Image 1 (cartoon, rainbow, N blue to C red):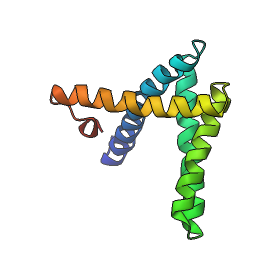
Image 2: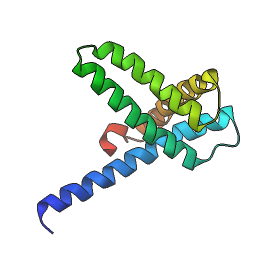
Image 3: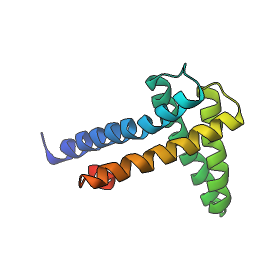
Image 4: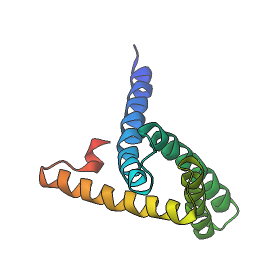
Length: 121
């Protein structure tokens, strides 16, 4: 194997770890809204939320409106959560807010043990 294949393999591994770590708070938050949601639903939601947000913010930044793109991108994330978790807009907002709170708590607890989430990636 040459160095370029290690870079690709490393990038895939980092992507998978980041995807799973990001999905955990979303999964826990979705369980608070509806008990029927699985970890697979959270994986799908975070993947599509990332894709939707990236596309929307890229388009708006390209045409010169990055701030509006961020707002529309967040609405896109909520729309993905609404569709995947089969909830209303308020449920999607609750999942998003709870996921951020859970992520901050997890990051704080890991920080107490000297593990910075940023250093994992």
